[in-house]
Image (tube, rainbow over all chains, first blue to last red; front, side, top):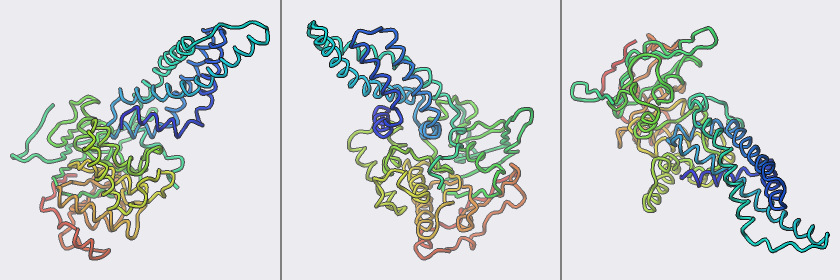
Length: 163
Length: 270
């Protein structure tokens, strides 16, 4: 199981828990598309991404400790958490970009001006900027999670399984 | 990396003078005191004792999850004291299978993928290797009675089924040593019979050694040796079960599978 596949499965199964990060990246993408402040938008996305990974690593301490105990390297664990953050950011950014494009088109029509054709350059730049920001922001909590005590994580009581 | 041979033969697991203590605030809790133990291939050593007397700590130390505070631990001839975290993880992946007390299944993976996980994490498998591994996982799950639950996630399995998935996961790497912390605590009836049969088959066919903490009398009956752990010490009630005590208690299928008690003499010092 590569970290990428494990990350994808985790995100697919756990996306409802990531609604705050999804909303934040959607909002940031929308702001960037509409030409709002880059710093504010990227800060919003970065903070949401870092907070999401930090909370996830706390909530999933047992699971991450199990992966380490079963042989996943610390580097692979960091990469898995980074990829989870990336999927979440991209998953939120894509609808955000669509909403931003519709908003830009609508506002241009309402004030009687015609915006130039945006093409794909701006959305791509927005997506890349958001991806880079979220990867950077998630790095610290991911590294911290890879250094957690494995035996301590395994000793935590399961929330549902111990029925 | 230090290795040690003992009279030409290397014990699979050797603990000498192992101590483990934790610091809680200003006090020091001694979880393990002066543990001496040797385990050879094909043995099943059962560790019993009251709750909170160091059984899980002992399995954590043997499973290389926690370092000992003092003493010497040789696993497959390798002195683990000199290993860094990465080398310990590599040795653990190469030599050890583990069943944890709370099963520790990955919630987003199906039962079969959970069983496959140690193999998939070890290295990138080719397509034929992956197919072989999937077939082995399916077979192991069938042998613990979960053939109908291959694609169920842990949330849809009851605790006994989760425990059997964890057991299959520990066995899939065909490790030389399996460390299991109360592996049959949630099993009874036919499920327990299947698991004991599988353990016995692994001992017999692959020479797998088991170190098992248990309070289950039926499992103690099948062990080559039983050790009593009390207040972190291997106590006076340590005993080698005589061969005649290894007898079936749950039916003929188990009688066929149970390996006779290990010929290895006890080498346990208190």
